[in-house]
Image 1 (tube, one colour):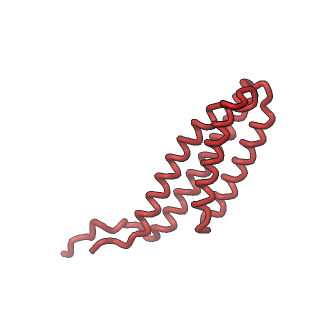
Image 2 (cartoon, rainbow, N blue to C red):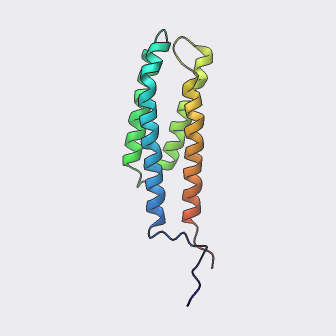
Length: 129
């Protein structure tokens, strides 16, 4: 009986698995950002800019999740994370219009995106024999 190859991923289509992971991560991010709108509207004096920015990021996450077959989605997803961190950085300049929690969410989802990218890179490598 042959010894199984323990270095292979064991997945039928590892690239598809990485794309699915990216789509799920972006979907969860869109959901979390949607849930952040109500507290921001209650906490901020002028919530309109933050609300529109979050809605734009939610739309970007949904579009990117739907287009996860494209190679450029990985870079665009990283830009979404950077934009979310930048919105959190704006909270120090204008605390009446922005909240630091956007930056915290950006850091958390940035770490999730980095993990997804790491998994993708690991699955793209050919198995060692």
